[in-house]
View 1 (cartoon, helix red, strand yellow):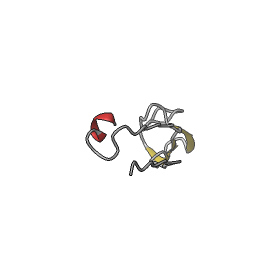
View 2 (view 1 turned 45 degrees about the horizontal axis):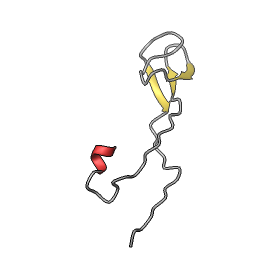
View 3 (view 1 turned 180 degrees about the vertical axis):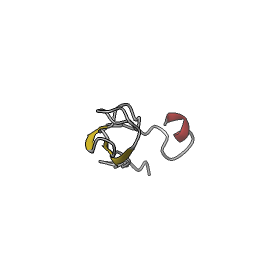
View 4 (view 1 turned 60 degrees about the vertical axis):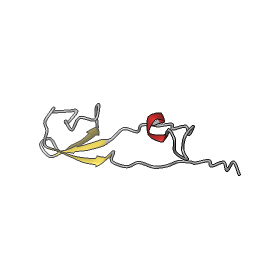
Length: 69
């Protein structure tokens, strides 16, 4: 982030990331389970016939802007 903002209006900005667990649905064992290490694998049967139900979203929780002018 620091390298991307260098020389821009966002230089010196701070980025904090909070990760939330994703959720997958397994079609083979018909269960929902927590996404492990960002790998699309069922945590129960270890199959790959899964659909990502939660975990694609990115939200900005808050932002503070200071104007030097």
